[in-house]
Length: 396
Image: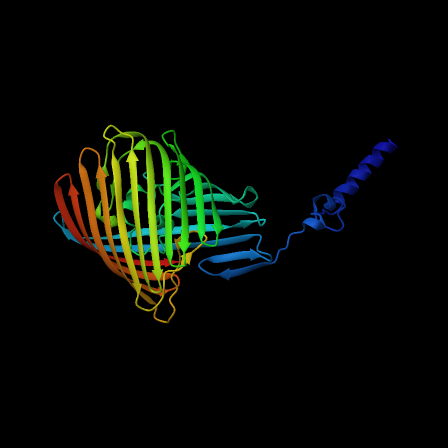
C-alpha cells in the first residue's frame, strides 16, 4: 500500500511540473536536440539587389536570388494573306529562383506563366541542380549547348525574335546531364546527354541525344564556335516563323518519323567597339525515306549610336547585358538577313530582312522596334508579307 501511495505521489508531482522545451537551459533533455557548437549556423543574412533580389549569408556559401521578366509585344502586318492584321501578345512572363547551398551546390527553377502547355500547365523552362563536388555536373532541365543565338539569353539578343533557322532547328531545353568547361580565358567546351521531354516531363516517345559546343575568342574581337548533336529518332515536322512570332509558322520539312538525325552548326561574331557582326550556319539531316534536310543561315549587324558595345561573357561564349553609359539610355541600330530552307519531297525557302532600333532605357529595360520583310516559297507557291513589331521588356 505504501508503495502504491509513493507511485501516485510521484506521478502527481511530474504532472504538476512546468513543461520545458528543447533549448531550455532548465531542461536536461534539451542537450539531445541542441546542435553542436562546431555545426552552429550563422544567422546573419544580407539582402542586396542587382538584376534580381538576392539574400546571402556572411561568406556567400548559401544564397537565394529571385527575379523574372515581362515581355509584351505588339504587331501590325500586311501581305497577300494578311490584310492589315494587328495583334498583341504577352510573349514572356517569367519568375525564377536560383542560388547556392552549402557552398557546393547550385540550383535554378524558372517558370513562364505566359507559355502554358495544351493542358494549361505553367511552362517549365530551367529546372536543374549543379554539383561542384561532381566537377560541376548539371542535372535536370536546361538548354542543350547549341548555337550562339540560342545560348544568348532572350533578354540580350539583338532582334525581337531569334533567327528563323535557329527557331526551326535548335533543340532548346530538354532533360539531361551535362557540363561546361572554361579551358582557358578564351575557350569554352560544353557537352550533355539529353532526353526529349514535354514541359520538363519525360514520355516513352522521347529520344536521347548527345550535344556539344565549343567556342574560342581571338584577340578579344573575333568569336568562333561550332556545335553538333547526334539525335535519336523523332519526327521531321520542322517549321519556322519568319521574324514574327504572331505571324504563324511555315513548314520546312515533314517527311514522317526519322530513325535518327545529325545536327551541326558553325558560328562567328566580330566585335569592334560599338559595331558588331554575328553569323551562323545550321543544318540538320534526317534518316527518312526522302533523306529530309533543313539548313539555313543568318547575318546580323549592330551599331550603338551612343557608343556602347555588346558585352561578351568569356565563361559562356555568349553575349550579355547592355548597360547604358549615359542618362537617357543607349540606342542601337540593327539589321538581319535570314534564310531557311527545307527539302524532303518539295523544297521550301523562307527569306526575311529585318531592320530595327533598340532603346535601352536602363540597365533592366528596353524598347525594341523591328520592321520585317518576309518572302516565302513553298514548293513553287510564293507569298510575302511585311510586319512592324514593337516590344516592351523589363527584367527584375
